[in-house]
Length: 445
Image 1 (cartoon, one colour):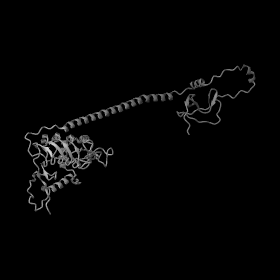
Image 2 (cartoon, rainbow, N blue to C red):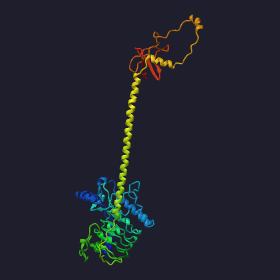
Image 3 (tube, rainbow, N blue to C red):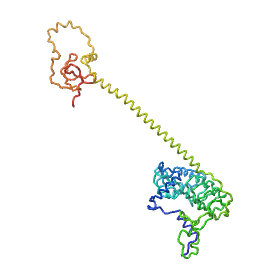
């Protein structure tokens, strides 16, 4: 079997890099070392675990919205960009917003939004972190989409970015100098585009950069800023067992190769450009870092929003407290009044005289008639039966007062005998043995 050419090895390695294996369950099991690394990553990333409640860090989410806005604006709403951004909702097309919250990192290394990945951060596999810890965007990986326009400068807003991969698109114009202040960047792959001008000197500040591919940008010229990786070395044979008949097997220096990529070339590669390989003589320019300004503005906005929420919460609590105090005050005022009224009703049962006076006030006034002429006529008539205490009730009636005292029947009111309680002001009254009036107890049904 013939040995693979360098180009074939490179293509196969690139395919493996773009489609890394899914993490196994065993690989996601936490360990003491992973826990220590995780805490270190939190410190580096500025992620207070006690105040985290979502997967994707809100600062990175805000940066993604700015990236999308800038890309659509500078490309005149190009269809290729729109196609990329179709998945930028909720947790992807399978669970769009508002069905799911915006969460490009998701629960796996490859994320839920096209081209946005949250891979290892400072050696910690982010997809294995607890649910209450923020994930940070580490990779912008959108190759081979024919994306037009300039490379959006908002790529510089991703503080924890480690890979920038936009090869085989249609980008043009100059490279943004602000990329030079992304402190964790270790791979830039922007080959086969249409960039012009020179490599910004600010990019020489990328001390952690290991892989830098700008091949195929035919109009890119000038020198290579000091600080960028040395010219690319072949690592293709370091990733697999070389066939025994390969005369070059083992002759490559694999010390420059790294484990996190299977790219067959490591370093700065600039084939098919106008770059000759000369290093720029001066130190790189100090970079202006948009992500630092963006982070300060974002944190200030977060602080203001939290302060506003705290103020509203305190106002709501104060309103609830005042309402409860007012309710208690009204209860304190109303309860004695009710008790006093009840006591007054029970203690002021009317006497016979008072009750009769009240009855007389309510009785209609009857004009006196001159009966002198009829006296002689009535003398001979039989007088009616007197209605007095000596009168008897036909059927004995037993009634009790509210104080459990026996009512005495009959009793006389307005010269009328009563053999049951009488109603006065919607209450029943009767006379007890001592001649006083008492309120009758209700009849049992």
